[in-house]
Length: 298
Image 1: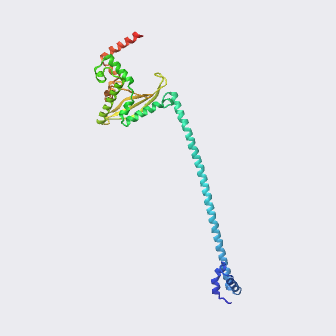
Image 2: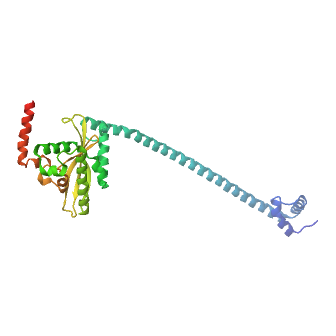
Image 3: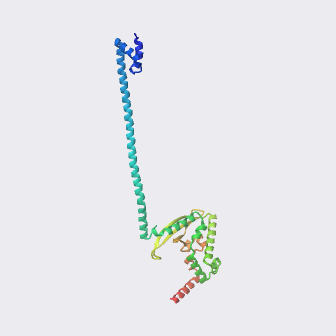
């Protein structure tokens, strides 16, 4: 059966791709044998298809290589990050291991020199910090409750009994108990602080001054020295108004050393010190009497 070249040309692409039936394939091949033109066209088309196939294969190979390269890069990056992470963990671990050693070294040094934060003064540091925090928060009642009046009570009672000063007797009674004395002191403190607050004063700039061990006074006893500043309504009215000391769980107050340093706070609280008593004529007689009594018993 004679088939025109136009029909064969239409079938060539299907023929080359193997998408024709056996009967159609046979007709195309018989036509090519007797038609040089279609044979030459088929030969040219096959070459093009082979080149297209080669390019397609090459592109596929490039895609594969690209995927392999990306995979290698990802593995290398992961490996590098892993090394960095391990080194970082090692560095942090080493720092955490060194921190206790450094802290122990500092505490040991301070323990030996008797100055600064050491192994045996943690209670004093904690108590002092608690007291300062209460003052900063203006929780004055709680702060006042931490004050120890034992030494102050002994001094006041000594003066009351020895000199019978009317102002002290009027303030505390002729023979106040320790609790009565502390209650009156706390009452005066809170009353004064409220007045100062109303007038625009504030207690601030609370700080540790020094932490030391009193070798000569009481060997091994640590003292935490604290100070705070009284600020008035204007920037010119401000000064340090005394220092607190913490020994163990006891907070005591060190007042002014002379009348010039005496603040309204100390005056209201009765923190006058020996310098104030020395101005009283009867005090010298009282001291002579006390010294004579002590010499008699010795």
